[in-house]
Amino acid sequence: MSSYKVTLTFTECVVESSAMFQELFESMQTGQPVMWTFQGVQKGRNGTEERVIYRDCVPDGAVDLQNVTVGDIYKRAWSTVVNSPPELQKLLSYE
Image (tube, rainbow, N blue to C red; front, side, top):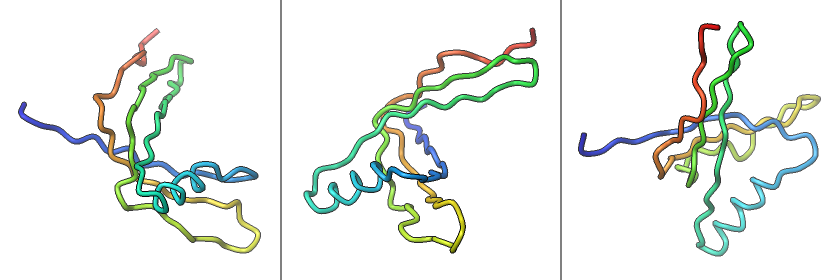
């Protein structure tokens, strides 16, 4: 394998804090790239879980800057490129 690309897409539901949004805007103003680390968890029906760490994630240009409906929880869709190999920490199992 000569290359690969990992993309992480998620929806942020904001209640009080919009720290990621502020970091993104500061990054656009200063020209310094923003880089995040995420942990994904998937729970199985039998109580087991799978965990994956995604490091060095940068926005890939697909960020939903304004999509607000009156009375709705503030939701913002994000898409990032993962610049480091994902780290599998735990697999779902058949216990």
